[in-house]
Amino acid sequence: MKQARILVTGAAGQLGKVLTESLREKYGIHNVIATDINSLVEELPPYEYLDILNIERLKSLIDKYEINQIYHLAAILSASGERNPAFTWNINLNGLLGILNLVVEKKIERLFFPSTIAVFGNTTPRVNTAQDVPLLPETIYGMSKTSGELWCNYYHKKHGIDVRSIRYPGVIGWQSIPEGGTTDYAVEIYHAALKDKHYTCFLEKDTRLPMIYMPDVIRATIDLMAADKSDISLRYGYNLAAMSFTPEEIAASIKKHIPDFTIDYKPDFRQAIAASWTESIDDSQARKDWKWNPEYDLDSMTKDMLNNLSKTAINK
Ligand code: AKB
Image 1 (spheres, rainbow, N blue to C red):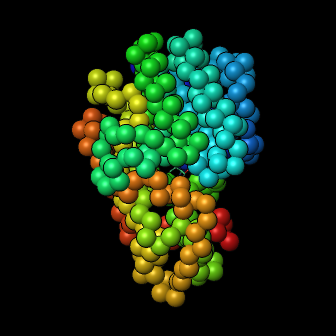
Image 2: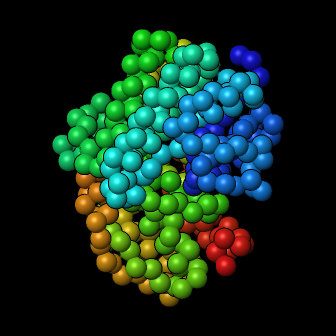
């Protein structure tokens, strides 16, 4: 393969910020172009403004920077998506279709498409959810990602594009703040624990969800994209697992470090979204194909989160 020349969409988001930094460490700052509709000029040069629906601009950026890989992170997440379904469908699905067509037209060598546990729904078995299961998502976000997976698979079969995808669990990290997701509580809780020693959770105490710590999810993404083509057996989202816990369990983990931390529960509309997802994931295909193996569990993540957050300005 040639020297990687990477374009990241949605680079100002929770995952985008950290992934862009990690890709720059691996491939060199000037080989990774950050793009987003939200401005972050000071933090992320080389940075370019990009509305994902503006195909002509996207095309000109691909030409300008001689891009040969795309990490297409730009999307509207589960909770925000419910506020404006038509807009969410347009950004999440039409945004992807524009990229898929350019991958074909510009002969882009590799595309990463993030999928999610939101593809699962009430007809999906909830425990140790297998790779190929009934998918009847309840949210517009889940609908757009399920369809997105199918489009990726179709473009691989029809046009031979090298597209790779992961069904992300809820992502937790200290470096950035998530926005508009249902799993966001698991980041907010650490900030609140350090600041107020109290958190009011928008999910019920026993809502178990699959989650992953930032260093693991970044490694998974970069490893999947660096894997040999011959090792990739799925061209739609790989199941990925690291840990599963409830709000009550994450609170207990925090209490080991902050004994007077307290939590109460005021579930809102996000409870129904969380309840439609699964509790735990069977990721044996990812482990087999590209040797995925998580490093962090709940307690080691809590220790690292609290340690890093207590040192950073983000929490002040
Ligand atoms: C969300 O909560 O919407 C996301 C996701 C699970 O994809 N974090």
